[in-house]
Image 1 (cartoon, rainbow, N blue to C red):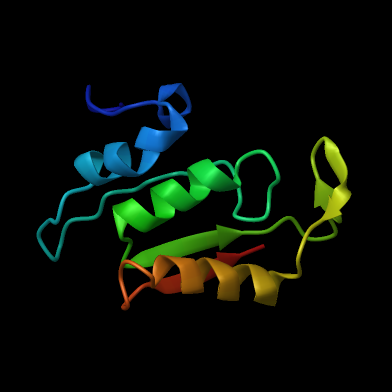
Image 2: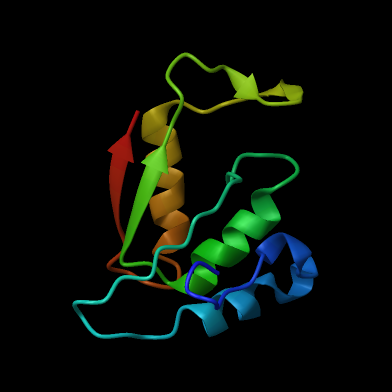
Length: 109
């Protein structure tokens, strides 16, 4: 959307999230990066479906996992504890590798 193209995925019916992500991130040159930012989490009770659709169909070569140190639960969902950083990275990589076996992760806290 910064370059005049894009799609606010929150405005897409969930059944079409994966297709929208695939259209927005086609295979590209080795030296080209598409940056896809997902605000949810595979662990969030309200946003996991959108996050998984983005992750699967964008078929990332790399993911950046951001984890708030000391945070124990999801915002607004205090009954849903956050996993530790290792589980978070492992789960995101496992799901990312379903559609791109070479998916790797970077972590920042």
